Image 1 (cartoon, rainbow, N blue to C red):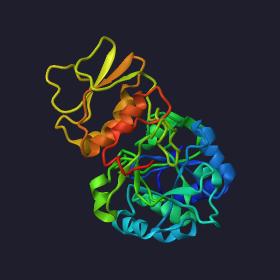
Image 2: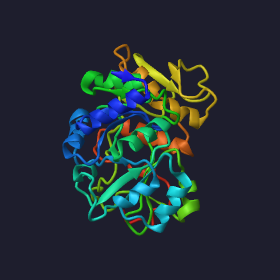
Image 3: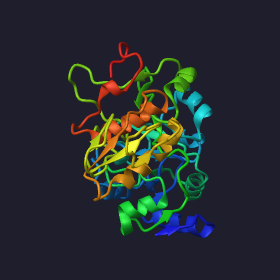
Length: 333
């Protein structure tokens, strides 16, 4: 049930959270499937609803940076990033405090925790009034397209969740940047709207995730599974034509190509990022056999967009390290 974020709506959301139920919550990135981060059963319900691997950690949403020290160790680099980008679309992976009350299931049993302070006013108000942090991955089935409106959540989950707070369409429409600060060197685990250049300016060199010597990657944050954010139809990338039965997702000037939808006719990567999940969802219909996507530049937000598209098109289980730029020589991850 979609409800307005009135005082009564927020109070009802808090009541459901206290009971261990899971609700839909707007953020500036995508809608989240929120539960009390202290309650193991509530966190387990998230995994059940999403059909999500339990070793894939959840992001913990807090009301302010002041709350974080109750749960994790906060190095100077983390403090500087929080001052620069919080509230906002930056998730930090930090070492759990030994007395951290947050469910271990929410961090996949690891000694780290992914934390974020969302900028959306409704998310902030809900967390403050509830008085506890919320575990909140994207409000969709695992590997599905992330929702950018309350109606997307309702379409994906139906009445599985009892309440969805309506915060309008998400401003950014792309999941948060994830930076691992649990080791000596900052590691970019997932690109997003806060770019590597901006992170470099605050904390010095930021390195990129990769896979060394054939070893499997330790999944320390959401979105690190290779096949992720996927529509039900096959996805063909870097398309220069449109095959029979395909929907064509365009970018920029498509010339004479029969574009079905265009992420940004002007070739604007910010607009493309905001439209990505909504348009993939629109094209994921029975009338199309598959979806083709025109090339997206590997620069700025295009890196994050290509990251999502590569995961959506992937058959393997882990991410492709070649997607990420940066200095790989000094990165042991």
